[in-house]
Amino acid sequence: MKPNRSIHVILLLFFVLASCSGGGGGAAAPVTPPAKKIVPKYAYVANQITNDVSQYNVGTNGTLSSMTTPTIGAGTNPYSVSVDPSGKYAYVVNGGDNNISQYNIGSDGSLTAMSVSTVVSGTTPHFIAIDPTGKYAYASNYGGDDISQYTIVGGSLTSMSNPSVASGSQPFAVTVDPTGKYVYVANYADFNVSQYAITTGGNLSVIGSGTVLAG
Image 1: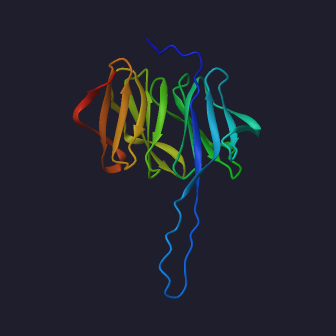
Image 2 (image 1 turned 30 degrees about the vertical axis):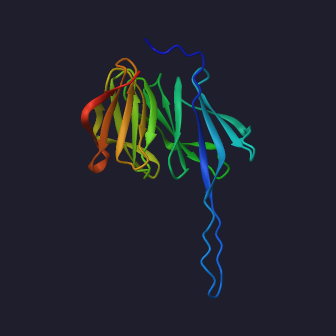
Image 3 (image 1 turned 180 degrees about the horizontal axis):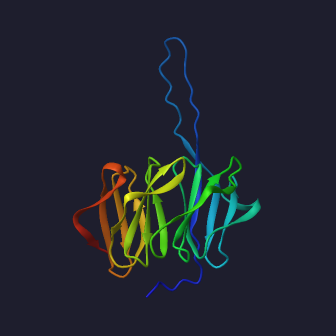
């Protein structure tokens, strides 16, 4: 049975790094630059019932305010939204259409559909995760018990030669570890987590026992 949720809201902040540094002259000791400060600028929310994505600016105090164009259309039953590491592209999984919408992110944070606006996924996709290099993407297909695999070129998704790998039953969420070496998938109906290594070309390969128990 699907989780009982009255509202599907997946919020993702697009972070921009701002840094500054200082230095000394002559024989003065080197000055350690201050740590980089992460400043959230934009936020996007997938609205499952209204089939669109809300767009927000993030204030310096963390408050959200709607952009001039408050929403942009998505597919049917969009479940979640993800932004690539460069902050240039956004992706929305449409559970009702079995596809993924692709957007460019403008200088003001607003989304515009790419020339190829959607790509095919598996059955009832729920989440999409981008690896830290921005070269690969993985979508969990809740109704298909598998994970779609994509390469990313110029922001656009293309299915790999092996378009999907098997997962557990009803894979709900997928994430890539910060090193970009591993992928983990939470399987709702099996109460476990699938484990993969990212191999040559971005393809996933099962590691260890394949799964570990969850709650």
